Length: 80
Image (cartoon, rainbow, N blue to C red; front, side):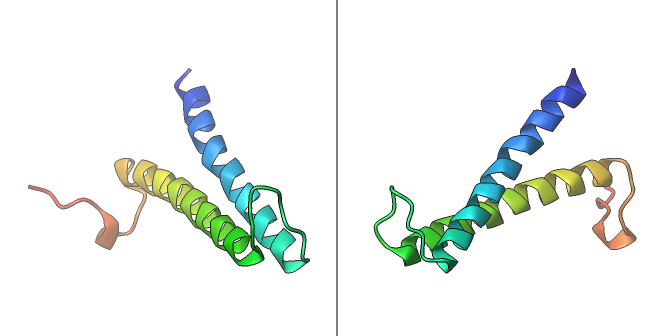
């Protein structure tokens, strides 16, 4: 059950990042999506979605590896 929840937690930001890539690609080819009024705004929103989704997935993986001591020494938690 925990693995399914973890998968769902990772899928949602992954889908948002994919949608962000789509928005940026559409702006590059001159396709304007309905909720946006300018291509620049569409690209900016797509970039924010992409960076946010990527950062969430990367942070999730980093946190998991840090708990299992699978990171380099400089990234390990400091002991008290």
